[in-house]
View (cartoon, rainbow, N blue to C red):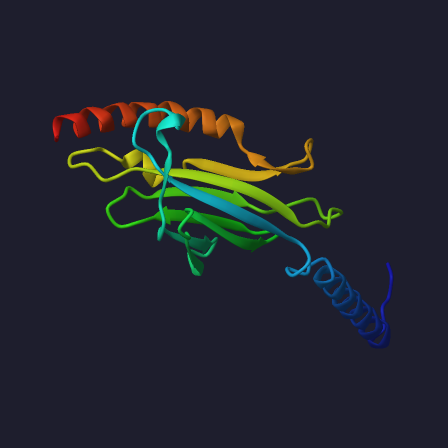
Length: 189
């Protein structure tokens, strides 16, 4: 059995505290400088007038893009210009919800996870095109309460990309909603 003196226990405690402080200081050095390392989102908001991409010729100017952090706090709002575009930067290693909206249109949500491997330091640019469509009475838009897309870092491509499996799943649900949308829109004319 080891017999510790009060002095050796005190020295051991001080060593543990000093090691903890050094570890904490080392961890803070892992925080990336958001002015140098970020994900830039270049968004384009189009007005959906039909079931095909070819029907998205008009842009939505003056749409609001809200960026919400993982604590559900609004951290930024951006407006699309006359060309339907808005650009903003997100810090790395965080999660965000981006809400695209305009009065008279149905809002859409995109989820963005900017977490990247610790050894990677870079600034990234990613294009996000969203088609908004005008509100139609009696349309069930519950599918749009969830993100229409999820964006995350793809380790194989070493860049940001859409979560293909999630997008495929959501697109199936969106097709059903769009079918109902165009039927209701036609009947309301």
